[in-house]
Amino acid sequence: MNDRNPFNGFSDRDLNDVGISITPALSLTTPESVSPNWTSTRGSSELAKRADNQITHEHYRALLTQTAMTNIAALTTLESKLSTAVPYAEERLRMIVDAYVISAARKIGRW
Image 1 (tube, rainbow, N blue to C red):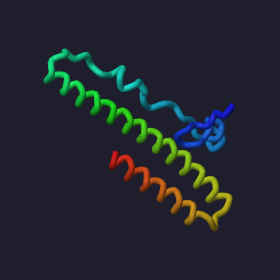
Image 2: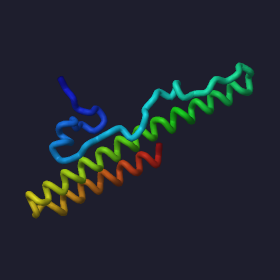
Image 3: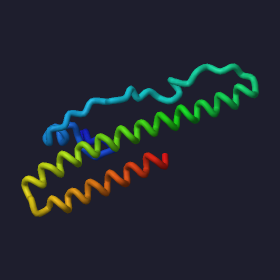
């Protein structure tokens, strides 16, 4: 059975091996479960659609942010351990993690 997280590629065991314990920071309910009931008039129907879109947008932005933060924590821990094992690679490892952090921040900002 493949127990790897589809968002970051790490299994719980991988993360535990490098000293990271991940617990969900968010209660990730479906956007539909947090949408309020709206009356069925035309104006409120448009308002409901916009509200549902905003709720869905923020829900997935939070999920993307949580995933990026989990990945950054795992990569930073791995960088630290590998830098200790292979000191000559420290600068390159840092550059790789920094590139991921910058890319993730840009994607979250665009979302």
